[in-house]
Amino acid sequence: MQISQPPVPKYLKKDELTQECKDLISSLPTERGWVASTFYKYQGFWHPCRHLQGIISCQKHFRAQETDTILVTTPKSGTTWLKAILFTLMNRTHFHHSADNHPLLSNSPHALVPFLEIKLFLEGENPDLSSFTSPRLFSTHMPYVSLPKSVRDSQCKLVYLCRDPKDTLISLWFFTNKLRLQNMGSRSLEEAFELFCGGVSMYGPFWDHVLGYWEESLKNPRKVLFLKYEEMKDQPEHQLRKLSEFLGCPFSEEEEKEGVLQGIVKLCSFDNLSNLKINKVGKLPSGEDYSVFFRKGEVGDWKNHLTMEMVEHLDKICKEKFDGSGLRF
Image 1: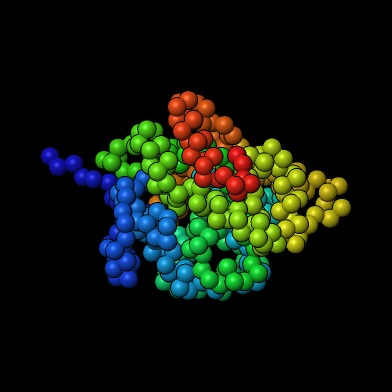
Image 2 (image 1 turned 60 degrees about the horizontal axis):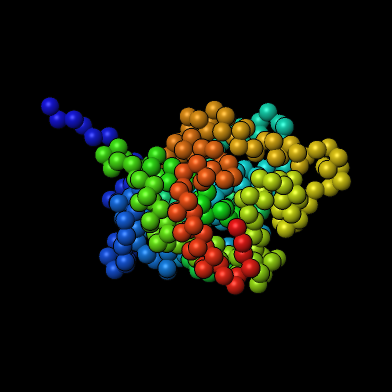
């Protein structure tokens, strides 16, 4: 009796690639992928072929507006959380954080703040973005060098969130294993560690991605705000004020007195978001369950998984890569 295989989810399909993307990937260096079988190296960074197609399309067609805000992260650096915070912060005059009809209560942050290269330009060569009212809010995992020229040349704002590489690695390992097909098996931590340290991870190398935005934040602090996940967790209200001032929508004295900051922090907290029905049962159009984007959200969970030898090795790599940059984890 033949056992039928489950259908391949959309995020792993290759049959919808454009001829342009097929021609390009045939000439690119390859490596083992974390979810898809293969990574392709483009402009110095590793991508699965479907994301690469979205990046190319975005580079060709996206036209940034001066009032745009783009949230940038490496995968598993607090993306979902920061999407919720930025959406709530920027739309607080339209949707009060305590309102029963707040969009976050019935929509995933990934639906409210779409990825440029994944949600928008992957699903259409040149999508119509006219429905997005100004100021527009998008997100991306693209490294700085791969951003569309219009983004780099305009005065639009970039908010970059990074996370300790050890926690990023562990979160990425759990996340990608959940997305792998059953017949692919789980990737061992040892193999994931080897790939990550070698710079082969989603949108990696990790340190090159981080340094690209760190250096831009030093050159142009009015355009690029560089945040750390650990500081966001430790001082959420302080970081929220910093965000609001950077985006040109600071909190008023009245909002401060009414506890708006605390309300936004509570609404967007890991505990609250992860327990909402939409984030337990909903799915992205590409097939991923919203629930896979929520695991622990803790600082220092790497201590429960990495050996001392792994920690020393990764710390040594980071020390060498970030030496002289002024950036510390």
